[in-house]
Length: 416
Ligand SMILES: [Zn+2]
Image (cartoon, rainbow, N blue to C red; front, side, top):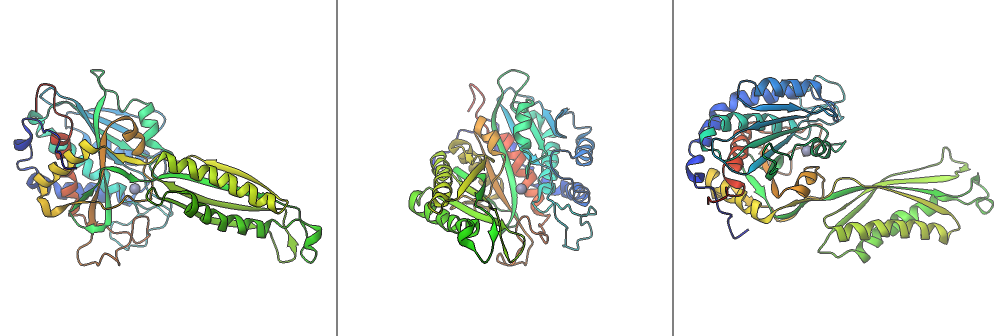
């Protein structure tokens, strides 16, 4: 983080007036956000949201393409100057829960809510497209605006990569990628980032313990899977603390145990479901092997069997050191040093921007959006039915996205 990446020659001038222009555009950004918020859509099929984004991008002179396997939008703005392509990403999907915020623009769709703030990301990225279209003369290289469905489930980013979001007309491909995520953990309008692992890898575990059913009064004539399952749950926690490096953390959570149907029948099987989160390939492999070993052998110790099924989820989000330093410096130049902070630790949640950062160096940062006057410990977290974000932060977010495209990418060849 200490060595700033060289900024393009136009870098200083490019940020002039950007934040003020973003604030001037805030009513439009908020109106778009609320329009999306009222009608949340889930997964990779978001036709209404896609249409809203397409309309909002109209007239900006962007080259727009839509996905074939998912309702994505990829829009490209050609800079007036030559330079490497920079990708900016926003996700567009909501979560399957009822909204209880009581906001005037609350979700009108039962069982769906923009509780993770993806509506704010989409509106900020449209705002950035407007800011950048007005600054095309200062822009070196193309900017690719990636509007992505299916972040919460479905791996939308991976599908967009398969459909060519990282490819560019000149064949060079996208050279740097940036994304923002709102959070109520930080003060509104502040930016927080770190280099290296920032979000965890997320994998699912499903263990089926196979015993033998029977009468609850005669366990010796059956093979009760229930105590075996309980031992496995506890042994998994011991496995993590005894085999994974404490400085390369892992979390294993068993979130569901299910067995039996009534009080006087020993069931045939018991099911354990959960998730494990890791930040490195080494820890991920260790936990994978550990779950297999512990489940099978604890079951064997009692004469039972365990089927272990591990489902690979998103890889970890790993921020590139140079691009993170460049984004940090850009944000400080834009917002002032008091509004930009270094994240002390990664989050063990998962984010599928990891698929993009596996291919292209870049950085994902948190944008504080806690409503003013709400103490941090009382603010509803992401994914809560009560999650509320301060919309003033959207001006900051739109400006940061735009500034990232103007200044945080690699320097044009021969420039810098
Ligand atoms: Zn999210």
